[in-house]
Image (cartoon, rainbow, N blue to C red):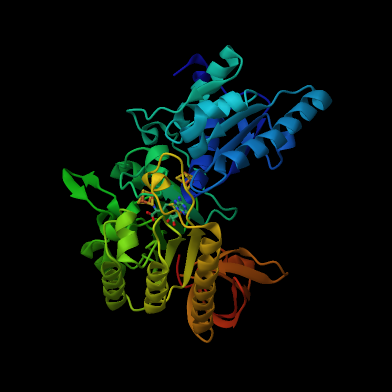
Length: 463
Ligand code: SAH
Ligand code: SF4
Ligand code: F3S
């Protein structure tokens, strides 16, 4: 690494403002970029006006991604100019993430005032790149897929990602090589790579020691995780078993999974590993076999139904969430009705649904029979109405039950606490702030649009 990296912290802290768009993997990456920059004297600030360095961490998954980046860059440029004028201070401007990876060159050409463009796999080189920019006077790009993985170079301390430090994301896998017809991820994040077990366990331990009680393991295909432990292959179920042994880690989740990699051993772990939460995000995208094939998903609608059936056998309280795309090229009314039927058959606790958006360079973008926008709009509205109904019904079904709630912090009103249910719903109830960080039993009494209300039933179950 360069001489700049090894130089000691600057005496006066420098402000770092990171704007994060996209998935949880970007949220994790932003926290780690902050970690990497800390030894250079950068500390997070809330407002871009106060920042010596601004990083825009971008997402490329759906339409107008690049346009959104340029308009945000225009805003940040003005802030930077005003700061220079008023305070005489320079602001370093970097664009990171998946738009940087996919369109880095165009980005620099259209926004030459950007100092640095870096892809998701190279942020461990940030200090070195910052030094290079300083030497070159701006306009540096690093969107390699390096042979070394960023995980080998990350500093030891890990910043947990919520204010109470009780829940955190942990990336255990990068990239994807499933090549679904519609998706940019294999091009922006590169091939699938699993992070070594020892490195995952070390970070998990550090997080738990710093107070984290609930971990979410991240990867674009996280259930395809394959590590190695003492010469033997280790699956996600095996990794979860190792994580279970960390004292103080109470809850474990993982996302995003692919139905194709939902192995029996992992499903059984949902019954046998008590730290697994009974909630799974398992995107299906469509309920039509024809569309699933066109999407290159590698499974049928009935295979998906079978997975859910098995999971429910093993873990009757499990709730499901999913992702859907309407209007993939070639999707007919009949195909869409098959999606509606699948949703009715399964009943989801929550879901994300999107209109298909053609992504440059992906196979689906070039296919004939693109579905007209107004048809997509109508299908999305119907699907979302059904999913909303199911989500409301699921929330309503919890009223009258007693749930284990991880108390994550104070509520909005005095004397109130805020917590997280096993199903990720925010739950509000009266209680003493000494309960923060513990799992308590709460009698759920009310259902609101996006949260639940309740009464403390029994204090301090664990920790
Ligand atoms: N790896 C995950 C999802 C990654 S992207 C998986 O395989 O399921 C998150 C979601 O964005 C996808 O599940 C999909 O529903 C949606 N998405 C991805 N590309 C899209 C596109 N081109 N148009 C619309 N939605 C898209
Ligand atoms: Fe994209 Fe498919 Fe990979 Fe998910 S599995 S990241 S949708 S290519
Ligand atoms: Fe977006 Fe990249 Fe995540 S495209 S969804 S930020 S992997």
